[in-house]
Image (cartoon, rainbow, N blue to C red):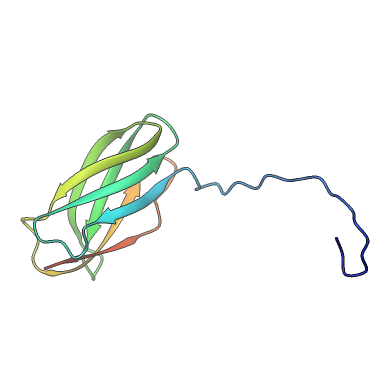
Length: 105
């Protein structure tokens, strides 16, 4: 209904972002001490790389895994990393997810 009291209908349009089916959905706990779990969404069965970068962009940790469609979880050991703030990404053949911040104490 419009401001003038008239009603009209329009066709619905589905809009899907290209990256809506791939990316990190949750990273916990943060702050973390020894281990963190990365939850991520994948569109299908594919090989993915999880990367942890320090504040200068240096690669500190990388782990590959086979993803399944929809939700995935990957535990990462942080025992070799010093205390600090890190960025976590997940990548596949199509691209790289949005970065997620991780604090290690």
